[in-house]
Image 1 (spheres, rainbow, N blue to C red):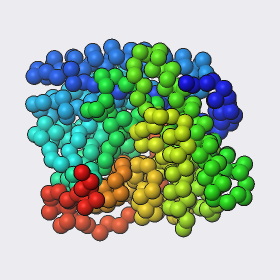
Image 2 (cartoon, helix red, strand yellow; image 1 turned 180 degrees about the vertical axis):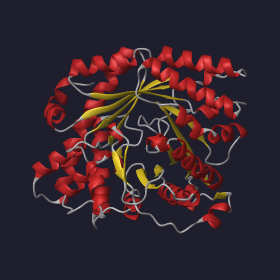
Image 3 (cartoon, rainbow, N blue to C red; image 1 turned 135 degrees about the vertical axis):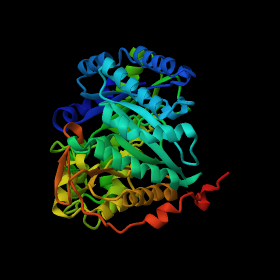
Length: 452
């Protein structure tokens, strides 16, 4: 039972510390839209999405007004389209992408996720067709987001899929070169993808989800950072308690909004995703949290340990506040979206190698990282494979959202605007893993996957 008094303490967080509901995301199943006729499929998809989410934006705005809680984004996620595409040709998948974009425009939502495929153990012809046009789909649409799951701890790593994704990322960068290769910012490659994630670009409505569902993503790096400052020079056990208590309060806000949205829309409540998702705004940075914990600069020695502690405390506080915490839930480290990460990367304190180490203990992975535009497909595939391996070996979700910024070199900067921020182009090793990547096949699942 939610008591409004439980969230009164968060008023100062909302007013002064950038606490917000980052997104209300409605998941919509498209399995009942399947049709052998391409036109009929697209018509049914458009009708189902626009009918199901017709009140989403208005409801989000009404809840924000009634409770005084900023709700930044209203989004929709759908069944991975490769699961409903059947015999669609590449042209058919392009038509479906345009349909999703048109539905999003009609609804007035920020993004629509689910232009996705799950290929961790193999690929059907339909999935190959869909993946083959991801770059063109992202270039021709403004609100469509895409994700591909290429590995799980149970199945191992599909290196053939990783090779396709390296090519897709390079083509997406080229096709959106006139806009700082922004197409790549809407494309993420996963291991162990969660099916109830409300955050883009990885959101989709998984096969175990109901016909419609409400998932809420909460964010509060500024609130956590301020709480740590107020705690002063306490020991680490006490500091962990401070973070847990703050995460509890933040999650209660998310629980309230999710419950209210579910009731008003007549749609089941799914999960609250308590992810410390930063923004480019001053005071809304995960990097600054780590520095307030005692680091001189994010990226220096001690960063991974501090991030591990932060991530664990956030999750412990969240699960006490809601019985339905899900999605990713933890600390995000997207370079372009975090003012402190941007500063650390520009100074040289934060390198790609250190970011990779940090992803072993936090949510997601190598996120919103700009690299030189002439980086080869094989090197990008190697980056993906390394990060995906961390997820598989540690039975956790990891992901790669990398932008080979067309025409840019290390030291340059690319700007994406809004919450996507701007990123320094990072220097990376150009040693080619092409022989390894081109062996193809599947890296077997680790021995600890055998738990049955």
